[in-house]
Length: 390
Image 1 (tube, rainbow, N blue to C red):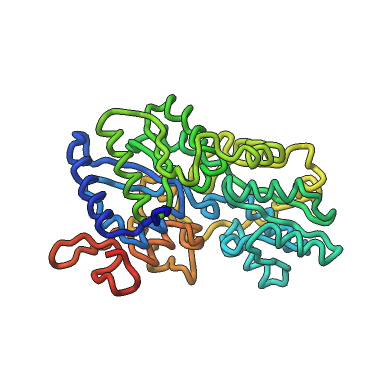
Image 2 (image 1 turned 60 degrees about the vertical axis):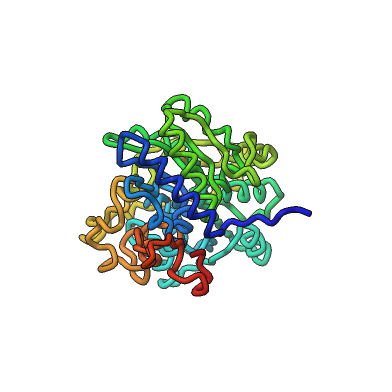
């Protein structure tokens, strides 16, 4: 009989938290700063109150792991310009509200543009097959969603469908963050779902170049605590290697069929990530063989009129770039929770469900979840309330 896997067990969580405290205490150079580059990790950390269980000398930073947040304004402008021109646009829900230079796709839709919200690229294919008019898929996301886009492109899509790719590739941005002046990131948690595609081995060259450990982590509370423990153990011992703490889904080589499809359709090029920097090989664009389905090749996209609008004073105060680079927190922003809230976001980090500001606004950033008897609580003070893992 196969044993049931438990990922929210309170006793194991307390044991991991205690071990983490002892490990961090043994590291001489404190505070210890590590970074994850995944919005799903930040959601889990905030939702389950994990920061309240961590040692005070351990700083877990969210880096540029929100694909919606780092989609650059000119890329959004391309989609908005096409929509205002009368071209039907389909994209994922969060992308509709992210502001470009002169508004968002939601603003374009309010002005009469046709903008469809989809949950998968397969839905876009259905939309295209239901009409003869041109349909543009504004594709965003990291390796996981880029693979889905590649599969559709290779699957004989309708002739009226084209793809405006704003897909991104995570490993190159880790290089930039590590090399940023003043960066104190001593280790990385890598996203388990992306590594399911690419494999854990993709991080080995990065570790060799920078002598910084990387741990591939899952998304349950025990996954994250165990991964943080392994990462801090390597920092304590001066070991730089890749450790796969998500073996139930991730292998060293990853999904080779998915990788073949990804790199058959896309090529990595340099491009700017919103608010951060130019990231060499960080953007994924369609190869020349797929020019017939490339929106940028099929349409003449004129965004010049949108660039005539100067950003508002509130936009100029937004520090989303610093937050995504891991050098500031949402609470450092004067707009956070005041002028900038989910109902009326100023910056991209407050729009997406994977944005740090949106997550912190919903769950809190570093909540005090200690119960009176000093028992570590990972969601709420009572295990019977709210289904928490107390």
